[in-house]
Amino acid sequence: MLARLRAMATPHVLLRPLRCDFHSLILITGGEATHVVDFVEHRLAPGSVLWIKPGQVQQYGADEILGDLVIFQPDFLIPATRAATIANYPQGLTVAHDTKAGGSIDYSRRALHDAYGGVAQQHGDATPEDAELLRYLLGVLILRLDSATPSSELTDPDGLDSRFRILLERDFRWAHDAEHYAKRLGYSLRTLNRATQRTAGESPKQAVSRRLVLEARRLLAHTDRPVAMIAYELGFSDASNFATFFRRQTDETPSAFRVRAGQSSGREAD
Figure 1 (cartoon, rainbow, N blue to C red):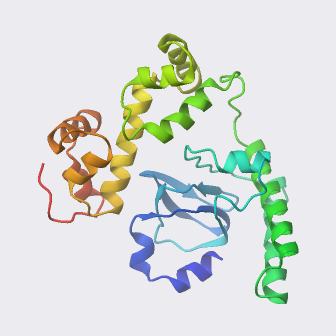
Figure 2: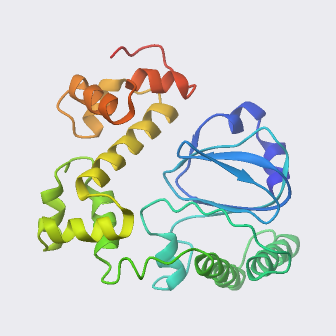
């Protein structure tokens, strides 16, 4: 699948920042490469797994790698299952694991690969029965990935931090104050702060700022929208306030970051 993707896409398309509205699971079986997800580099080698969730910005490296690329829409998995909950958790979850040949993740990868290959060879288009089988096998793969990922149950036993992250994903564009989230969740700000510090080592206010910066970087890297428009989309009163916030959080201006990300439109000035 990865080889087919490179054959179908022109090199400059894969080397520039991409933002998709579907899930991408990259499972490496050969070669090594660097893959950037939300501006963090991940070195991939045989046995590595990388999960890019909808909305994350990714950038393929120039190196050749072999393996499977599993693409699926957010509503593809069987509803109300643990796998669907994991996949549809709004915070981007990028995982990179080194798995031994024949391990549970690799076994699930091969089962899904073989099933998909059989469907494509026999029918071309999946029947309802084929789709159900692929949903089950993809769910198993996701559960295997989850079991290999450190659990947050010990640090977030009541799920308050998880509920905060879900609410944050919904409201961060317009609600920049931590009190908003504490009130909506029905807790004091002190209680919410304890939960986020225990789970992620940050205050609710820091989490809101970090999410705003991430979205700003995504928009600056992946679009040519003017800085003023991005400021408006993220709930700032004007471009100047947004630029001040961005510079305070990142030590560079929005336009400087855009140039560094390789997506300067040549129209903005801070």
